[in-house]
Image (cartoon, rainbow, N blue to C red; front, side):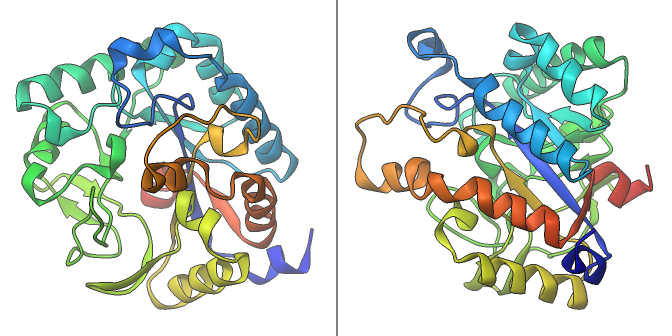
Length: 279
């Protein structure tokens, strides 16, 4: 056990949004998915092996589509002692759905995952973190469907998502029973720095991420970190797209594996469910 691991004993929440490399590209609709190479296992196996190496548990937000097509992947996640939660069925942002469509999509994903794991699905994360001020109605639907927590709100603001004035730590949302556990940022309002993984971890130096999580732990409590399996797949295809989107999907992929390994070596991680509810 390393000195770094001993130093930072607070258990943070580690999460993985389980989708194939093309399913998170906003410009590709689910009716086009069959046109692209399946590479989920290439990244997911690396993630699971890495977590097992350091005895790190995590919450895996799995697309219902993935669970339907690859139930053995969901079974392996569960066997590893991880929490399996919902990422919706078709990775459609909430702002592109009606409330009825959203309810049907999420309910479908919840049922298929529960049928595989024989365990109640407690958590949900929206594709593209799309619980925004104009889609807060989704939280009431999640509560009605029996979810216990959501981890979709980003207390920052960019062109796609975010509620910059929202709380930075867990709080009651929806009608009052659902717990919102937002992605972790430091700063306030427009002047926030996300220190929660994903694209931000690929872009920023590891020392800044490490300092940010330490600061968050000291001032606010457990942090929420996220990543995708495709971020550990260095050979994933690159598609022609505008520069902004190429940066989001491809920038610094080669560094992500080493940064995640350093992170789980320096900090203690577990599932969102355990952080929130103790198990």
